[in-house]
Image 1 (cartoon, rainbow, N blue to C red):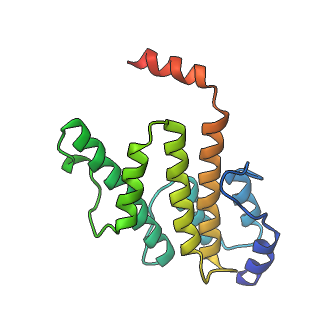
Image 2: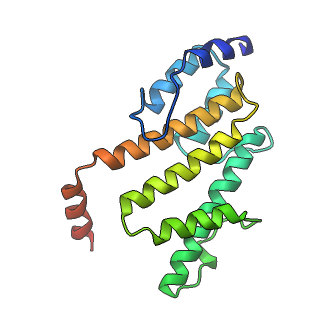
Length: 176
Protein backbone atom coordinates (compact mmCIF):
# COMPACT_ATOMS: atom_id res chain seq x y z
CA UNK A 1 0.00 0.00 0.00
CA UNK A 2 2.86 2.41 0.68
CA UNK A 3 3.50 2.63 -3.04
CA UNK A 4 0.24 4.53 -3.46
CA UNK A 5 1.30 7.58 -1.42
CA UNK A 6 2.79 9.41 -4.44
CA UNK A 7 -0.34 8.81 -6.49
CA UNK A 8 -2.70 9.99 -3.74
CA UNK A 9 -0.64 13.05 -2.85
CA UNK A 10 -0.18 14.10 -6.47
CA UNK A 11 -3.97 14.16 -6.93
CA UNK A 12 -4.64 16.42 -3.94
CA UNK A 13 -5.29 20.11 -4.65
CA UNK A 14 -2.82 22.67 -3.31
CA UNK A 15 -3.89 24.43 -0.14
CA UNK A 16 -3.35 28.13 0.52
CA UNK A 17 -4.26 29.93 3.71
CA UNK A 18 -7.55 31.79 3.42
CA UNK A 19 -8.93 29.75 0.53
CA UNK A 20 -12.22 27.92 0.70
CA UNK A 21 -11.42 24.24 1.31
CA UNK A 22 -11.84 22.11 -1.82
CA UNK A 23 -13.37 19.35 0.29
CA UNK A 24 -14.06 18.51 3.91
CA UNK A 25 -11.83 16.60 6.28
CA UNK A 26 -14.23 13.68 6.06
CA UNK A 27 -13.97 13.64 2.27
CA UNK A 28 -10.19 13.77 2.59
CA UNK A 29 -10.29 10.67 4.81
CA UNK A 30 -12.50 8.90 2.27
CA UNK A 31 -9.93 9.60 -0.45
CA UNK A 32 -7.11 8.36 1.77
CA UNK A 33 -8.96 5.14 2.69
CA UNK A 34 -8.65 3.99 -0.90
CA UNK A 35 -4.86 4.21 -0.96
CA UNK A 36 -3.22 3.99 2.46
CA UNK A 37 -3.22 1.46 5.33
CA UNK A 38 -5.95 1.64 7.98
CA UNK A 39 -3.40 2.35 10.74
CA UNK A 40 -2.39 5.52 8.90
CA UNK A 41 -6.05 6.44 8.44
CA UNK A 42 -6.53 6.18 12.21
CA UNK A 43 -3.52 8.43 12.77
CA UNK A 44 -4.97 10.98 10.34
CA UNK A 45 -8.38 10.79 11.96
CA UNK A 46 -7.12 11.18 15.52
CA UNK A 47 -4.49 13.82 14.88
CA UNK A 48 -6.06 16.09 12.32
CA UNK A 49 -9.80 15.61 12.26
CA UNK A 50 -10.62 15.09 15.92
CA UNK A 51 -7.61 17.01 17.25
CA UNK A 52 -6.56 14.21 19.59
CA UNK A 53 -2.93 13.68 20.37
CA UNK A 54 -1.48 10.34 19.43
CA UNK A 55 1.72 8.50 20.24
CA UNK A 56 4.30 10.96 18.96
CA UNK A 57 7.02 8.28 19.02
CA UNK A 58 5.43 6.84 15.91
CA UNK A 59 5.10 10.22 14.18
CA UNK A 60 7.91 12.69 14.99
CA UNK A 61 6.23 15.33 12.83
CA UNK A 62 3.12 15.15 14.99
CA UNK A 63 5.25 15.46 18.11
CA UNK A 64 6.66 18.74 16.79
CA UNK A 65 3.17 19.94 15.88
CA UNK A 66 1.81 19.02 19.32
CA UNK A 67 4.67 20.81 21.07
CA UNK A 68 4.06 23.93 18.97
CA UNK A 69 0.29 23.88 19.44
CA UNK A 70 0.50 23.20 23.19
CA UNK A 71 3.12 25.93 23.59
CA UNK A 72 0.94 28.41 21.70
CA UNK A 73 -2.15 27.54 23.73
CA UNK A 74 -0.20 27.78 26.98
CA UNK A 75 1.16 31.20 26.04
CA UNK A 76 -2.34 32.42 25.24
CA UNK A 77 -3.56 31.10 28.61
CA UNK A 78 -0.71 32.85 30.44
CA UNK A 79 -1.44 36.18 28.74
CA UNK A 80 -5.18 35.95 29.34
CA UNK A 81 -4.74 34.92 32.98
CA UNK A 82 -2.25 37.73 33.55
CA UNK A 83 -4.73 40.18 32.07
CA UNK A 84 -7.52 38.88 34.36
CA UNK A 85 -5.24 38.57 37.43
CA UNK A 86 -5.86 34.81 37.72
CA UNK A 87 -3.30 32.08 38.37
CA UNK A 88 -2.61 30.24 35.10
CA UNK A 89 -1.07 27.02 36.47
CA UNK A 90 -4.30 25.05 36.65
CA UNK A 91 -5.14 25.82 33.00
CA UNK A 92 -1.78 24.92 31.46
CA UNK A 93 -0.98 21.69 29.68
CA UNK A 94 2.46 20.08 29.74
CA UNK A 95 5.06 22.82 29.96
CA UNK A 96 8.29 22.87 28.06
CA UNK A 97 10.59 25.19 26.20
CA UNK A 98 8.61 27.82 24.29
CA UNK A 99 10.45 29.53 21.42
CA UNK A 100 10.27 33.31 21.21
CA UNK A 101 8.22 33.26 17.99
CA UNK A 102 5.39 31.45 19.81
CA UNK A 103 5.40 34.03 22.60
CA UNK A 104 5.45 36.82 20.01
CA UNK A 105 2.53 35.27 18.09
CA UNK A 106 0.48 34.87 21.28
CA UNK A 107 1.09 38.47 22.38
CA UNK A 108 0.30 39.79 18.89
CA UNK A 109 -2.96 37.85 18.84
CA UNK A 110 -3.87 39.09 22.31
CA UNK A 111 -3.25 42.73 21.36
CA UNK A 112 -5.42 42.50 18.25
CA UNK A 113 -8.77 44.13 19.04
CA UNK A 114 -10.69 42.49 16.18
CA UNK A 115 -11.60 38.91 17.11
CA UNK A 116 -11.77 37.77 13.50
CA UNK A 117 -8.37 39.29 12.75
CA UNK A 118 -6.93 37.60 15.86
CA UNK A 119 -8.30 34.25 14.68
CA UNK A 120 -6.75 34.89 11.27
CA UNK A 121 -3.36 35.60 12.89
CA UNK A 122 -3.58 32.34 14.86
CA UNK A 123 -4.44 30.42 11.72
CA UNK A 124 -1.59 32.03 9.78
CA UNK A 125 0.90 31.32 12.56
CA UNK A 126 -0.13 27.68 12.66
CA UNK A 127 -0.04 27.51 8.86
CA UNK A 128 3.50 28.91 8.65
CA UNK A 129 4.68 26.44 11.27
CA UNK A 130 3.16 23.58 9.28
CA UNK A 131 4.86 24.90 6.12
CA UNK A 132 8.21 24.74 7.89
CA UNK A 133 7.39 21.32 9.26
CA UNK A 134 6.57 19.99 5.80
CA UNK A 135 10.09 20.51 4.49
CA UNK A 136 11.45 17.19 3.27
CA UNK A 137 8.08 15.45 3.35
CA UNK A 138 6.66 15.12 -0.12
CA UNK A 139 5.16 11.66 -0.61
CA UNK A 140 4.75 10.15 2.85
CA UNK A 141 2.40 9.94 5.81
CA UNK A 142 3.90 13.09 7.34
CA UNK A 143 2.83 15.02 4.25
CA UNK A 144 -0.72 13.71 4.64
CA UNK A 145 -0.77 14.57 8.36
CA UNK A 146 0.34 18.13 7.62
CA UNK A 147 -2.15 18.35 4.76
CA UNK A 148 -4.96 17.21 7.08
CA UNK A 149 -3.95 19.76 9.73
CA UNK A 150 -3.94 22.51 7.11
CA UNK A 151 -7.34 21.37 5.88
CA UNK A 152 -8.61 21.54 9.47
CA UNK A 153 -7.30 25.14 9.72
CA UNK A 154 -9.06 26.06 6.45
CA UNK A 155 -12.33 24.52 7.61
CA UNK A 156 -12.15 26.41 10.90
CA UNK A 157 -11.38 29.67 9.11
CA UNK A 158 -14.19 29.08 6.60
CA UNK A 159 -16.66 28.52 9.46
CA UNK A 160 -15.52 31.75 11.11
CA UNK A 161 -15.95 33.77 7.92
CA UNK A 162 -19.29 32.32 6.86
CA UNK A 163 -20.92 32.23 10.30
CA UNK A 164 -24.10 34.19 10.84
CA UNK A 165 -22.63 36.90 13.04
CA UNK A 166 -25.98 38.08 14.42
CA UNK A 167 -26.99 34.56 15.46
CA UNK A 168 -23.60 34.00 17.13
CA UNK A 169 -23.93 37.30 19.01
CA UNK A 170 -27.46 36.51 20.15
CA UNK A 171 -26.36 33.06 21.32
CA UNK A 172 -23.43 34.52 23.24
CA UNK A 173 -25.61 37.15 24.88
CA UNK A 174 -28.20 34.53 25.83
CA UNK A 175 -25.52 32.50 27.62
CA UNK A 176 -24.27 35.44 29.69
